[in-house]
Image (cartoon, rainbow, N blue to C red):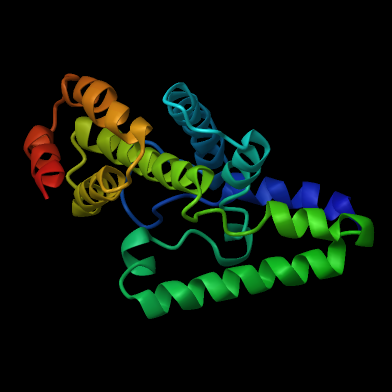
Amino acid sequence: MGIHKYFRSLNELERIIRCPGKFKFEEHSVAAHSWKVVQYAKTLADIEEQNGAVIDWKKLYEITSSHDYGEIFIGDIKTPVKHSSLQLRSLIQQVEEGMIDNFIKEHIPEEFKSIFYQQLREGKDESVEGLILEVADKMDQVYEAFAELQRGNTEKEFVVMYRNALIKIKNIELKCVEYFLTEILPDMVNEETISSIDIRQITEEALAL
């Protein structure tokens, strides 16, 4: 089958819906999420670069564009479930990485195997690119949850998603995080909302932790 099998598999990311099982005003696919993460990440990386960081742009684009490819095999598992325990998170990651490994072994031509192992690896690490991926990934959770809350969705899961993603972001030591918190987030919170939920209060409480 060769690389054709990989290209065809990308269609599946369009059919995997994020945060399944909850009422949403707007559905988001894993494919759309991945595209947005790339957009966030390249701007975050520009901010880091302006502050003296050296960015490996090839690595950044590889890990951001492919960071959720493994969900083709396991679907979108809700963040609260994934992170309910370190053991569970580790097991999920092992399953995902194992299935990616098997896919590469079975379908990718020998001359490209090492490239695919590199591109589809777990990208979140302590490198500046890995940290930017973490921030960008959580930023999309912030935006998705905020859009639902803003439109009056009172599902508790979106409050939890918004709050936890903000907490995660603020604890990552990057200049782009400072910029997000001081320049971008206030614009978001100041947008008009019809929600009965006090988004500003949730934001302030999350940032105070």
